[in-house]
Amino acid sequence: MREKINLYVVIRVDEYESISREDGIRIKEILPTLEEAVEEVERLNKLNAGTRSHYFWRLGRYFPQGRTKESDKSSSVSE
Image 1 (cartoon, rainbow, N blue to C red):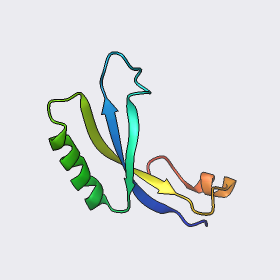
Image 2: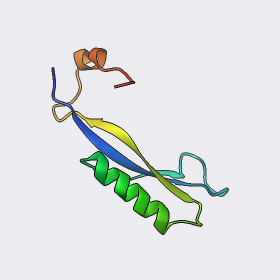
Image 3: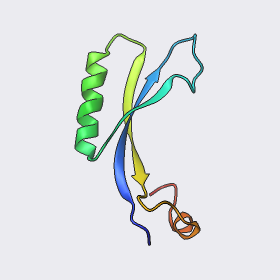
C-alpha cells in the first residue's frame, strides 16, 4: 500500500455575479493539521465578515509516490 498523508485544504468562495461559480472557488492554502485549518477558517471569516467571500476547510489526501490502480481500488470517497 502506498503512503497517503491527510492534509487540510482551506477553500475560499467568492459570490459575485460577474464571475462563474468555478472562477469563484480557490484553494487558499493547505495545512497539516485540522486544528490549524479550523483556526485559519475562523480567522479569515471574521476578517472578511460583510464581504461576499466565505472560507471553509476540507480533508484532502497527498500521495507522495503517486497513485496506482491498486490504491484507487482500496480508496473510497468516504474515507
